[in-house]
Image 1 (spheres, rainbow, N blue to C red):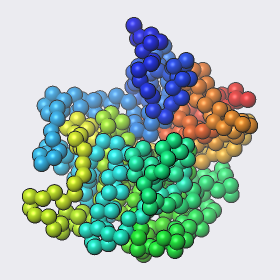
Image 2 (cartoon, one colour; image 1 turned 90 degrees about the horizontal axis):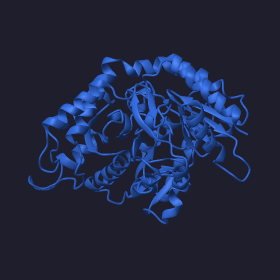
Image 3 (cartoon, rainbow, N blue to C red; image 1 turned 120 degrees about the vertical axis):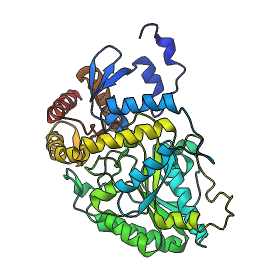
Image 4 (tube, rainbow, N blue to C red; image 1 turned 135 degrees about the vertical axis):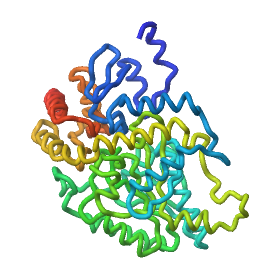
Length: 443
């Protein structure tokens, strides 16, 4: 980092970061390999978050790196409007085979935020194509995170993410969140309240008229808010209600797809068939930005195959300059091969009970209010300091990085953990012993 001084920390406006504090105490990484980052001062940092829920195959996997390098030398860019390249179709076919049911079509974009906005637009276009243009209402969930586009922010339900921007999209409502006091310290899917929480959808439909609702969007496991596993019967009941009323159910699987729950998707792991699934993050193991939406055959047929547009007309006027970018598709194809050849989804299933045991050993440490987990997703919720919500979590993140060579993610006073699927049991033991030391040091 020769020549890198304090003045270099001014120009970059960091997202979702207290920038003033960061400039005083930067947390910089300069390299990554396997399950570790390398800090600017040379320390090896154990990555307990897979970067940002992304790097499921670990860092710097040689097969993925080589695929990106080779593609960059062969085809640097191909326009996705009116033209295409073969890898885009190959990747779509591989994803069709990976996802359950008739989720047969992939629409590519560049991020989870774009994937959510795309899915919402597909839902609206589907109903209009079927002559039900009155279906314009969208329903999200309190404390849900669906990215930062106007659509995703509107259906999202995390207050601090929204309040700076004033009114967002009209015609949006929210289900109650799923974190219940009765489910504290539950292991896996919580036992209480699932059917009742999902039943709130029936009340919203009575209020708004189900014939005006286009889609319901939820994360199968609420991730960014601090890992809220779905209570037993919750998602199943949402599926039943939406299907009965002709409403599309969208699973936002930007976090949960590609092995996080020990399967290709949460839909597969939990055996629930949504109508659309949003993807990103683990699609390329975080190496090249990429997102997408998996779409059921019926939806694609209504919008594309049955379009009244002439043969030269565009059926769905939506997309991005970098949709199915050649480097991204190369990274994704290599990543899918790594997942398959190294059986990383099965490895995650096998590791999940060990992860659960280590996580729940932390429950009796000072300041721990709750522990939650499903698959290789976990959270430790801390008691907030009086009048200083988020301060204890922030200190935990700082101490972990600077004093214990550990990268964790925080959301307020909740610590979220999502290790790469390549973690070993020994690395899990390091993770929980270091995190325990962090928690013991907090006041």
